[in-house]
Length: 450
Image (cartoon, rainbow, N blue to C red; front, side, top):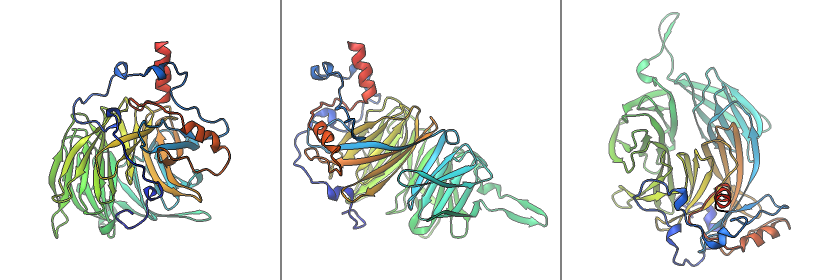
């Protein structure tokens, strides 16, 4: 059960007895800060003599099996169920809500797709392009544009798409007849890079490359607070729905935590987290069974994480997750799963162990030919299994939809058809991990050695 009292996907996975795990599977601790060089990654004799280091996927089955751990950690099945090509240039933003998927690009259109396979249902036409940030909550949609303004929409999808623009932030004000001016102190002066929404109080946060954060009260469309948050561009912002604390990540390499004073709308800095000099590109919060973890993806390819104290609420650095070869551009989290997208064109799936800061990489998902710019994920419930849908958008001008099943290490996949028999056979193949490597990288490595 999660902290809302609802069942999570992990309630459906049988817990297996834990055994001692090898250091290569543990989340890495501070220092060194650089990713492990390719030439230093150890390869076992068994893997060097094998034509392919990973279990081959069945020709009858679309599912691919991630490399099994030597320990009984969960393994993972995934496959791409849709790939959308050459949309409107590079995809800059993606969001999901109420069975809808929204994508923003350089064009003036916000495309709307139906989950899960991303069947296009229409688009929202705007007056400004370069839609760099999208946020969806229930039937509300927030989009940030090239003109440094935010549009607020009401969107629903049944038999057909219905939409209505509710407001443009900041609002125009009329001072004199036939003259309309814009309150400049309320408008961002550079690209709006990210948005966050505090559900309990209806507050929308926008952060920008102009180094500021602005708070908008959605009910009356007013900017109620504006403050300079960092010395460099702000690239990511998230809000903790439990306590309203706001987290900002910047190119100055720092993460700052902000809170509102009691009875006031203004924000004050409570803590600065800085563990690496590299720019922070992405943030994600993961709350599960009373625990709270903050993750940051940076340009050095690392995913750092901090754990929140249960008593004082302070965040302590727990380590970093190493595996990406280039910068981490996007993060998203559901329960104890964390998804990271990188400039190296891959998506990594990480799992955190209950009651500890232990992490393991369950899979390296390949398919994009350009940097993975943004991610969105949700739980999917089918008749025979419960899993995840992951939507990834890349600068290769594609959006891909991945269906993921998480399995217990010694458990066989639940399947609908006989095609999964080959998948079960693949699951029995034992593979070493040191660490989890992408299949194409391993093939190149093996070819070079031979």
